[in-house]
Length: 481
Image (cartoon, rainbow, N blue to C red):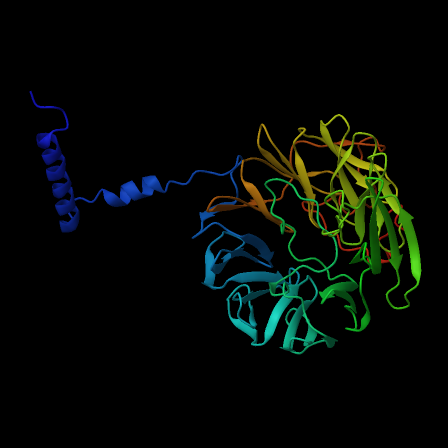
């Protein structure tokens, strides 16, 4: 008795395949397009469904809003898509890409690794607006583009550009650049952001340029005024020190090993005069990663604030300009995200996320969340990512009003003024912001929105800008210095 799958069965399958190929080739019947459509059938990445969803050529390295377009950076290519419907606009080969400018003047900067120069492209057409053939590194901000050119190892020039400008705003001499300063946005001496699972590190896009920047050059720190290009000072850190430039101050962070422990001290100085403006001790800024107290990392924080841990284990948020304690968490609470106006805190019972004002400490809103929920703050939304069930919630940072609630396991790739991009593998989708049915629990105001609160009305929140080194652009309670 013949076994199943023997020569007769295989011959019949081969004959059937030949017949199908012949019918497809002659145009009589072609099942392959239908089969391919079935294989590529779109599966929504969230519930409710996103405004649009598309499959791109490769897994995205970053996604950024650029005006009315969405820039998708991949390993060796960059492409732009129309924000309204996700249709492709242009693509080109590039090893790195970044966005500079705001909603109305955004441009795309692209380049190749280990190759000098870059191009500034129009985000809608991909047309080259400006080309540079000598720069070794660029830094992209919401209101400024910086590049560094080196004629010799000890002869470099830093230049500042308006995002769409054709002539430098200023130039500054630097004696050299670190070997790590190349391509787009190499690390400067500032703060490390708190992160969250399933949220991209660059989710907020470009931010306003700080008033001062610290460039590491040959073991020294060169402090540059970004308004004028003036190099205010170049300083070499002490043996037990780490330097950082935060909130318009040069910070000296010392960590000394004694009696099996690390003893921390912190001071803020005016780079122009060298005078000490403030000092604190006892706060662990998480710059040292072992008992030897060697400080290998920048302090945690964002914009003009930094985060420390008090001896009793409670976390504190400091103003980098004057050293004020803007917030101290309660027992059992944990900081999830900060900017220079608000902090998101996991409550002591682990069942909620609360938004706190910096400077006043008032709780603006509280939102139920799981014990493993993560959160980030962007200029347009506070984003909470929860597990079991997997959910992404975008809220107005000031009022807690729901902007989007998605049941999804996708990652949050970018947040902009009108919505956010989420992605899973090669699939990306655009979720528009809009009113939601649920409201958070409000604290201290009976649940009514604050009169005159710019985040309490309208379909979308207004962007939150930097308060500046002296909080001169902030008028919220507790931020008046």
